[in-house]
Image (tube, rainbow, N blue to C red; front, side, top):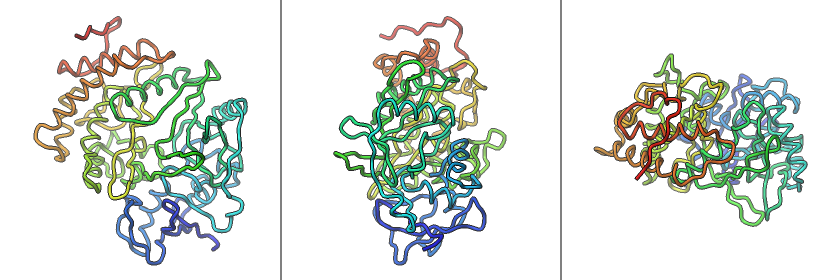
Length: 431
């Protein structure tokens, strides 16, 4: 079985991974007699042939891999000479990744036996501090887990109020993010963005801010896990970058290119809507996408790229995942420009967006009924305005940032572009 990794979906074997001709490529072959089940593996390649196309398979599995500094740090620690060596990364860290895909090295089953080790609050903080300093997952050589994303984090499991380190192939249930010195209010902003998403029904998992000052961290419940007692059940998902077959190596490939907005190697709102319109099931993911695109604009989230939007594959149907990593990034000191990750009606500049732009963008998709785009945008504006009244602003979120959200929705409800909020502007009283 040398140089072959077994791919499982919900614990059932579906295929084999072998090395590709280049470090960043792998080959994927279905197991003999494989027939697609009720849960879709990926939208990137659907037909069951002996082998999947190498670029499609590589970008799908590479989409689960480490990114940026995490990739460099953790591959170096595990003795992987080339951080773009996808096969080596999947072999070392693929036992527990996002969703319900697991990758098993048949030659290392004993070494990766799943188990949980209790961890104290003090050790949690030490690992979070190390993750922040090193820019990685705060893990050690007993972990076989990874999670895409550039922000430092720690993957833990919680059972009965006790925290545990997942060892070997054991799965985490929560993501913990440390406070970063360069972004002291970042966790509070993310917590606030999530609370607003929950109020709008765009997210259903829980987050919690723990501690104060330099010892503060954000606890995020994983929406792709179901926990019963000490049993963790996986929910299958892939992000839009994987489903679109975007290059997994390019950390910028998840953003639409402002210099080439129609570049097929990059995402766009149109391409994502087209993808969502082809999903199995009776749900309305395109309508849901317009609702969260409107939410993204209102929140001022310039990091809502293709990897920050995911598809959950359930038996017989596929739906949009809960909103995650939704942060009002545009309203803080030291921001770089006003560009969004995806253009809206041709505009990347957040200040130039209006409700009309959102409606025209959605109408271009040709996937909604007559007048539906306007109804969705109008309703989302009203729901967001109400959410600002109902959701308490967490301590640490600057008043100016919270005030900007009120300005955004006021401007769009009045029919104008967002523009720039005047100094000293106060939110109007709502009847």
